[in-house]
Image (cartoon, rainbow, N blue to C red; front, side, top):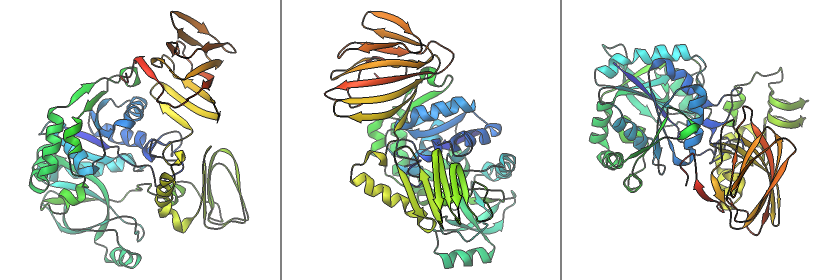
Length: 472
């Protein structure tokens, strides 16, 4: 039977702030070497079947498309107009799929280094899925965690899996220790396997209103190609109004807990949902004092301290039980016992309208990136990087002029009726209201410095006339 991996790419980006943010959640952050958790997930599921279906927020569409291009796993990206939790996301994917196909639902932000062991475990659940069960994969617990829900295993099934006896909410510390000692419970990883038709039948039985909203949205869905951002990949946009009417609920509450025919297959390999900075710290080796360092961190007379410092030297002197996370525009210093409270801090930043709650100084775009280096009254300075062969939209601004200086590569500039090339150390000026476009015709990344000046410098002062990425 054909297996289709479905990657659930939702996430608010709060638990790993300030590295992860609302506009750039943790699944897109290069946490393991130079690869993101989404990239690793795509590589992990690629041998199991395809093409991949990803369900993602509209605002993250080019981040997902670019990662799929890098991982060489083309497929369809179903774009949620608004966030409606995992039940709706799974319903969209099941409605899109062939009813006879087996769907493997995987969160995009899990770390499972042994891909081969994961693949073998998934295959152990295929018979149960083929017999009409919804299969969940439970992680053999290694410590009494209070951060995860638990699954109590029941009797063995003829298909080789185990019947789920009960789902258990995230416990307190004493209950978690008791569950671990019992030996019959697994961590709930939120990874599911089911025939598309079976998942739709379960949604119809337990959450018919969610399924009806998603069905209406998918019946009026439209497709779009992301252009050069991800050749071979399609955007699928459900109809907005119908999807907005959908109730928000997790698949656990909507289907898994009330459904009768649920099987579990244990997975004993290394697994983490990388749900806190403590979990990120555990990905790095420890020194004899239990310190862990990523990047340019230095520890002296410190114990149990984690430093994430990719950009500059950060020194911890005489510290104990600390998390120190350094980014260009925000720094987090937290006691390791308070790692789960980071989301509360982000909520306070949002209430005070701090831009760092949602956005990085460096912003990813489908054509490349820009980094806001400096700003003041009536001016702003940006570093801009454009991928080889990529173009910004043909555009104009009503309130600002721009000076461009090329510092690396070659730029093809359209300014009004003229088009010309600029090489390193050359510059040009774009007056207020002038139609213009920047293109990289070369084989290396184009980098330039942009100085904006004018009465208003917001990103919404862009009138796009033509755009490769469908943003006009």
